[in-house]
Image (cartoon, rainbow over all chains, first blue to last red; front, side, top):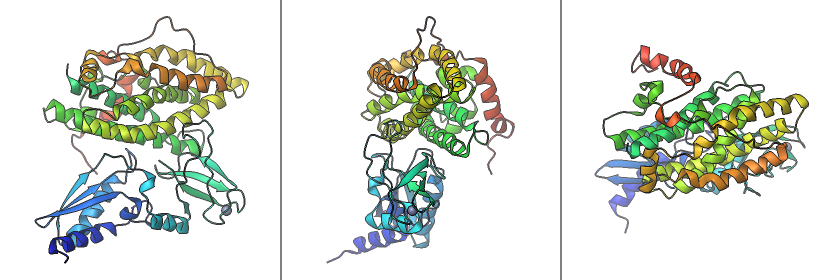
Length: 164
Length: 248
Ligand SMILES: [Zn+2]
């Protein structure tokens, strides 16, 4: 027996979970693991949202989009910014990784060494041709969460979603 | 002195260095660095915002993050002297970044077990970001220190110019001591071993030696700053001060 409360909870989650990330619109806030939880209490949906990077300029835009989506679904809304535990790329779902790859962004790879290792290289697979013969052009790419890479096999530059 | 003053010190370090890095935006020697430096600036400014907010809440006088950043004068800023040093050339900017990150990485690592939930949360995020800062700045220090004759001369000059500001990182003000005793912030002096290890690792590859510092410079935590900070704040605060509360 499914209670009405569970159904409402599910409706709220579905509405919020479908919100696309403003900087990487191929994935949703649920795919990225940025939307942590939803609690519905007396018609008020409280959404727990975690920022990816401390200074990610998209944080506010993401919170506003989630709020708008929940309002459209008929809820009063409160957004709670969740800092602990800190977001990690491990929270990106399998489906999210697939979507990133299809979009041309290499999903985060398990870092082989410490990120502090000087000139440390992580083997990143080219999202276009699957070659692992790739090189890092810049640790810091077009957004806080991405590094910039180039594929030596197909010569395409591409974004890599950094492991954090 | 109180715990919120100690949090303000850390917030000021992050904001001032973040602002310094942002000054490179549009001026960096190559596009990759034009993205990298503002990216690191964003990490630091993002951290500062949460800390200002927390310091304001603990202070209990209703001061917001904007009040903290825009409405305090130079003498009220409590940042250490290292972070306010002007960008200089690329050698100075990268060595300054390495010194700061090599200190802050173990600092945030320890702060993850802070008794203040917000500090612990900030720390969990910042420690991951600072690892990237160490690597990025460290690689540049190696490239320049062990690069051309010209780059080595510049890195050597940067080292002489900045090494006198390192000691202050390890000093705890009375406010910081209070926060340390309360388990809110980690003890600054305890970061020495981790800092030395990081610097030794980079300097060995860069062919650099930490110079003997006879007269370490200090005073930032009591509001005594170099001339550069006043200029920086004048620029950073000018819009907010001439049009209070303006938004766009
Ligand atoms: Zn390829």
